[in-house]
Image (cartoon, rainbow, N blue to C red; front, top):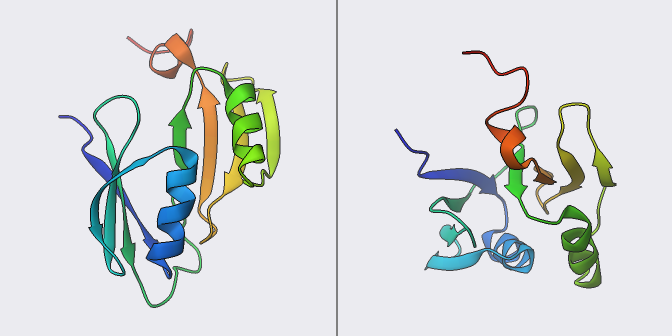
Length: 125
């Protein structure tokens, strides 16, 4: 099994599209205002957004995008006008992370885990 895509809701798909393009995703399906789909710059995963009348009040997806250099990525995105909730920090689970929210309030984590993403020292056999 392989993860094909993650789809999130948005009340304004057009604005959300611009936001995710600014993050570096490549638009591959454009059915604005109802739906869009992106390719991630690395790997084979895709990411899509579908239009909703109202956002869920309690459940939010947390979206993780792994990059090689969190600090440089954050700096580059800040220069493009992206605001962060927290800045790059080494976490006890051996990931370096920075946090932000998209325009619909979905949490996004820009991180680097390297080998610790799938193989942390505490991985079970």
